[in-house]
Image (cartoon, rainbow over all chains, first blue to last red; front, top):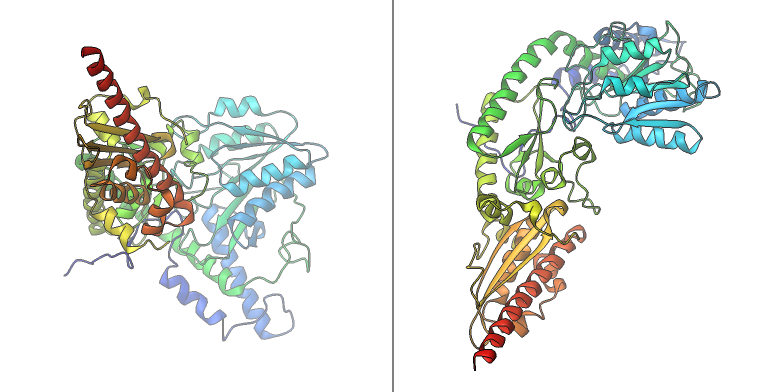
Amino acid sequence: MTAKTWTQNNPLYLDYQATTPTDPRVVEAMNPYWTEKFGNPHSRNHHYGWEAEDAVEIARGHVADLIGASTKEIIFTSGATESNNLAIKGVAKFYGDKRNHIITCVTEHKCVLESCRALQQDGFDVTYLHVQENGLIDLDVLKAAMTDKTVLVSIMAVNNEIGVIQPLKEIGQLCRANKTFFHTDAAQAVGKIPLDVDDMNIDLLSISGHKVYGPMGIGALYVRRKPRVRLVPLIHGGGQERAMRSGTLPTPLVVGLGKACELASKEMAAEAERLHGFQNRLFEGLKERIPEIFLNGDLVHRIPGNLNISFAYVEGEGLMMGIKDLAVSSGSACTSASLEPSYVLRALGVEEELAHTSLRLGLGRFTTEEDIDYAIERIAKEVNRLRELSPLWDMAQAGIDIKSIKWAEH
Amino acid sequence: MAYSKELIDHYENPRNVGSMEDGASDIGTGLVGAPACGDVMKLQIKVSADGIIEDAKFKTFGCGSAIASSSLVTEWVKGKTIDEAATIKNTDIAEELALPPVKIHCSVLAEDAIKAAIQDYKSKAATANKGQDAAE
């Protein structure tokens, strides 16, 4: 067997938190619904409509099963961004005249933070919880922030940059005790870790298709029925999806999401175990080859498919340019005009100079052990080359504390 | 984002990487940027008695464009007088490497680095001259 060769135009994919490839079995399941079985699932008068509707309902069942919900609690949307908007704005607008306080967290995805900002413009009070150094929220701080006006707590299940898993069950208990709804953005968690909406007292849960080896352009929102959570819809129209999300359902995409969830239900446990081994092999391999690297976020409370590492003294984007045969993501965001490093890493208290040196490495279903060894080799070689070019590395070797230098911020 | 051949060449095969004796009176050192901003350049020049830059070395912490910009200027300043070197503009660097708009600041930093190195050399020379005057 010859080893795969990775190049700039065919790089090894290690960015599974950005998106996951659609599983070929998912594509296969979707195929008939573009051409032969093309009916509108809302058409009630002929076979084309019925077969599409049947497929949609089977898919809804697979989505529900994966999170321990019932089919009537699953609303299909265009993706997790829409689901998060609908959950947060929908609940706030329905209950806002009685309860107008929302709690979220500074490391949430932008679509949660921006939805909350929009509600602040409409007069809602929003508390943005800080996180601990390991990326997890402090439950005592959450408890202290809750009042009898708190209508919603929105805390993500798994962080997209650092992969840490928040204590969902404990958050759910606190919310239930305070009669506050608990929404979780589970885009990075569904199919990666076991989720049970009843056990965890989750009232609303956002799902993304393309993070779970399903297609892009589809997602779902779980909305609890007992006790019932009510929402003001964002999109008005024909009253589809229990009037919470109007618009014709895209049958092929819905079928794809359903198939992806079905596969995840079956394969998640074995896949998690395999990826855990790879995560460990990658982290240990890098540590062995490269001194002074630092993991961002908790190692234990973390999905197995993520590592976020600061390679001190080497700027992340400069590093990525040297490993063009690896498709990874940088925490430095130097390409944006702002030059601001990742707000998530900053929230953990990672110093800016270290935040600029971080890479996010995402592993997934199609990653192999050979890929891990290749990545270790390439990253180690390039980090060591760039450290030879780095004046900061020189200073560190000479025992100079780079914080003691008066830098001209630009 | 596609980078130019010139930029990639300087990134992959950087010229004049290294350090020179900082304390020497014929060496000027410029250290610009900040780790918190994601780029730091150290540029050093060795100047002959008649004001010609005989050698230049650099070390850079930063993105590929920052590394390439500093590598390029070490090539450009060698053989120039310090006054000629001081006229190198960031726009020349940006043009040579075809820097994308978000990377223009890298060329600005490289220009700053040359100016800082020249300034450091001049202030050392001035101190040395003063010392000489006092001795005479």
